[in-house]
Image 1 (cartoon, rainbow, N blue to C red):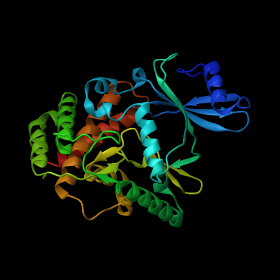
Image 2 (cartoon, rainbow, N blue to C red):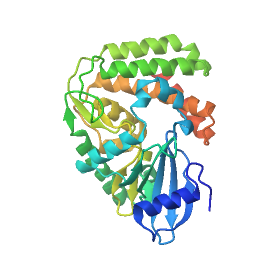
Image 3 (cartoon, one colour):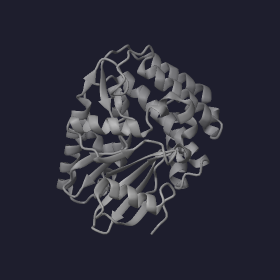
Length: 322
């Protein structure tokens, strides 16, 4: 059995039996690769049952520095957000992995952890290369319907589900502040970004200045790439990594969908979106992902080539938007 760095085999065995019963005996726990903000392990039992162990441990979070000092990351990390958004999305008919149990007592460990449903299947990204065009079309239509239902939820203040306070700062200004920090970080490590720093900064302010006030917001995932949609063997989609979800400008989500889904964005495209916001948020995504890739690279993220490519790709497109 592979060693779990967060829970010992004995601790995990006790936890599994506490949640599911004495007939569940642990046979394997395997750490998944790729998680930047939480650790994920697949858990198998002798009776054939499988589930996932999620661990929110700030010490193994690749963005802990931002998490401790920046408002944006605080709004996209933590077991309480996962639990709240799971309940909210499921109550509105949006499928997410079932939450079997959450331990956030902090008595034995400095981190929170949970047992979560295992979805046997692939990501939506894997279906980009699927050879069955009929199945592929059916899947992306279903994903489009799911996204449409999620985005149909509206209210007149932005923020998390449990935060209904009116904010003085506009959504776009929040993202502009984050983008300024991202640009500054990248300019210290990428020569062509450094050379274009002033123009990129001016472009950011120019795009934000074109945005008109708004007082209606939609529920969005906040980082809805095809890798954050799991697809089971019945071609039913399921949202994952939902901690960042909340009410915000819809264009923030759509600019990201267009960026990540490419030609498949046609299944989600909406005509009644604000072009100024779309351009602004697309630019912000490029700056954020450029800096995010660099930070993963510098903080020894396991997939160094992915981090390097991420930074280079979005730096290139940020400069091209000039």
